[in-house]
Length: 470
Ligand SMILES: [Fe+2]
Ligand SMILES: [Fe+2]
Image (cartoon, rainbow, N blue to C red; front, side):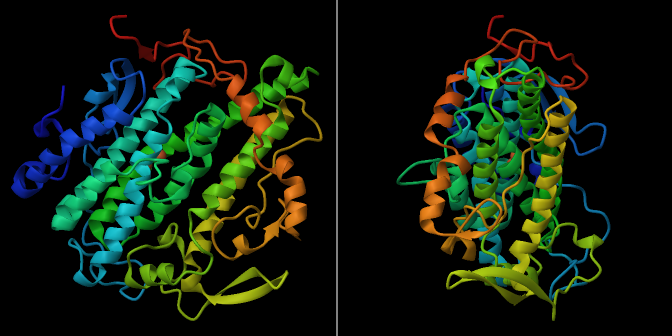
């Protein structure tokens, strides 16, 4: 059953804007048929224990109940305005924030919004086959929570397009439902979102590393001088936190299972767990793929977005100054077979400045996983983030080859070690061989430890997903 517009939870006074209502009314059935076609395969009629945002109040924004996913109430929420906001950075520092799109920034803002928006449905498409091979009912529910919220993020971005970009916005909103992850003629915009995710180690790595790029992009947009974008992304970030938890703790539980076996002197592979070197290669692959999503190290687009007040830095408020003028950022870039130091104007290095924050956050998670190894008696072995120069497809580092420690190496050397550094065919086949759905309450697949606790204070063995008629 399709929801009618009156049932769309929102705090944007949807009822008062007829033009907007008509646009959303036309778009909604297309969204629902997109969800049915390429949303979670085989689970459209199950009851899933999901949280739904129904208001932005701290105590009321998330309610938990059994929902069939096509009936999920995808809402539209912006963090409420708090007084008169001013632009917090760039050339327009201190000017009033914009409630409408300024003409001169229309194209740039549309591009920023569409690029972000495109990742939301893309990830749902990438993950659509995972349900059938979920390692537990708890994980199955978490996957679907992430999926419906990425659907809501698409709604959030489409609202901005419909509300602020007129006819162009409506066309972009249609295109968001027309592109397909991995399609050869209409692929999704960003590369990492065209890779299929058909095993759960990849899903956890995606939620850990790729969704975490999303967090930093959203955080930079949460500073935007275009106030509706800032307030939309702020609310999205509150949901994003759960996705990142699913990724970080998913990997942690895989590591824990492996560590427990190693601590007992057992061979993980013999017990259907995932050896540490395989986990490291998945980490290397997904981390580096995600690093590329921040864009080139030196970028005039990034400088323009910052100057105009469209996209800021991570937690701009905490920084001492907000113009980033007359400062430089020091980079090491490959040139004629060696690394040379380059000083670039800080504004041109904004992608790298954001990537710095991201890398720190990823390192924090790797430290947690290494504690899990140590706690279980694994000695002398640990996981590591590869250097950010390693295996890059975007920016100056993509023009040369580096090892995971960041040392420049020859093409031949890279080829000789590729199989030990990046996911190889045998890894893929082995991980795939472990993928069997485990749907008994409280049971876990052989490669993952149970979570420390359940969702919303429910027990781990709660019936998070119910088959129709059950
Ligand atoms: Fe999202
Ligand atoms: Fe997400």
